[in-house]
Amino acid sequence: MAKRRLIILGCGGFVGSHLTDRLLASGEFEIFGYDLTSKKCAQHLDNPDFHFREGYVDSSNTEEILGDKIGDVEAIFSLAAVCNPAEYVKNPVFTINSNFIHAYKLVDLCTKAGTWLIHTSTCEVYGRTIASYIPGDEYTDANLYEQREDETPLVMGPIVNQRWTYAAAKALFERYIYANHTENGLPFTIIRPYNWFGPRMDYIPGRDGEGVPRVLACFMKALLDGQPLQLVDGGGAHRTITYIQDSVDALTRMLDVPKARNQTFNIGNRANECTVAELARMMRDVYAEITGDSRFKEHPIEDVSSEKFYGPGYEDCDRRVPDVSKAERLLDWDPKYDLRDTLRLTMQYFHDAWGS
Ligand code: UDP
Image (cartoon, rainbow, N blue to C red; front, side, top):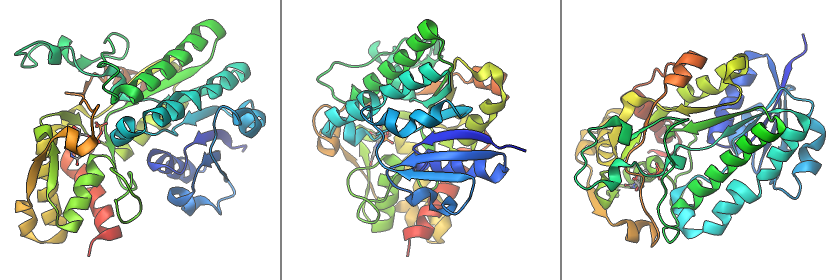
């Protein structure tokens, strides 16, 4: 039987590599994958159902690289992105370029070909909660903080706070997709991930990359190197952590659900909400379990200002609570991994790769 053909832009990244694993394992798909590097998907390079092309796809070469393929596949997963807060503040032009300017041509080409574009956006487009602007609000009214795909306003801070370069570029990209849907009939699905964690996420500074990665890799590096875990501005911000296999479930389910088209989905595990300070403490405990060394339970944690950690222009998302009823209803999606298991599986991977 002929295989179903898909394009994955960003197949060599954290999410793309897990998605590629899952789709190829089913034996049902032929994948055309594109990325700057095949490091995280090298396990598939010999698979005849996987066609990898290395390089940067931007608006000047999208047509040359993808033009012939786009009309010939069932869907395109667009997963390539710069999605690291340290970059939004230090390299704001690059952040906007990579998340909008270099990417928008893909929307034009999918529109022209009538090909389904499945785009991974971000929960960060919601920005800060309305509750966070109300003095003394204790998050008692879910209408002021819960994030609903088709109702909740997108609330970003002022432009001098360059943290929002990413959210603004991603939000404009979503709007460009939606505008092309309503005006020109583009079939689309937009995914808003909530802190997806798992093996292969980011890099460990000083080992397989340089810079400031996202919180999981920052805390992991600190545990590996015997340095304190640093809580930015006290670690009071909330996050909703989702295990990558649950996320990939949502991404693959939609391929067989016609109603998933022309929808935006929050994909996050509501049961796994925690503050960053709670995350730090749980990671210490889990690492003590993994290593069998109970001293990790008391591993030092210290406060650091966001100005010192990221530089000027950082502002945090206070809380991210997804309404996922649409994914439950339309995709029959039900995340299974609790926070502890998510951390155990993720941290074990990094310990095996880099721990002594
Ligand atoms: N953070 C922290 N210490 C670190 C790295 C990040 O306290 O070493 C905080 C950051 O300020 C934010 C949260 O952890 O409140 C999550 O940051 P991440 O970089 O993972 O990305 P985000 O969830 O903001 O997109």
